[in-house]
Length: 231
Image 1: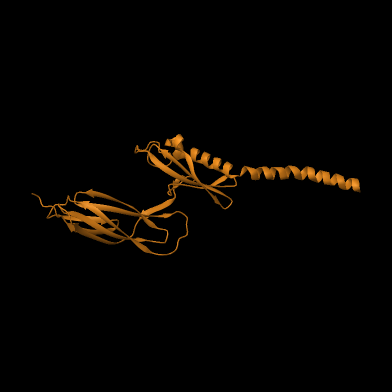
Image 2: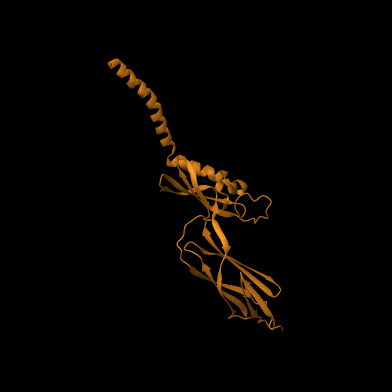
């Protein structure tokens, strides 16, 4: 019986030791250093960097322990503005700095966001951008010489995660269009708190006296008179 028991123990150890050794080896692979290498390689292979990233500018700016892994802030510069593969697009040639927050858990990248707006895994904006609801639009004359037309806009933020994004002004003859957008993170549950934002826009001076102009701010429409005297 003793011989049988010893044989069983030996066989059991022969089976378990390789398993334990493999487990330990895997644990050693998921160190901060190995995770940093995973994060750096992910950034190098991401479409934005591959398109026009400048290799010698890439560096790990900081490392933070998070849960079962690490989050790396990786910075680099690209030769044009924009994100992803921009083949065939009209590109703005300007050196553009990027900051990538890459989270690695158990040797895998689980989250990667560039400049707080580009989802590097899904290759799309990590923000939902949409037209803002407009509550008030006031047109006023600014204190200047010559007189300039200013616009005060009050819009809505639908929840606690939504913030002002931007605005674009275009003009066609006597019609001025202002597109105002807001942004919020994709797939995030946010507090149901409705708040407001306010923005002032300078439309300039090219508005002839005696002419009525139409102003469209998203779906809000109003009119205002010109002030520029023709001399």
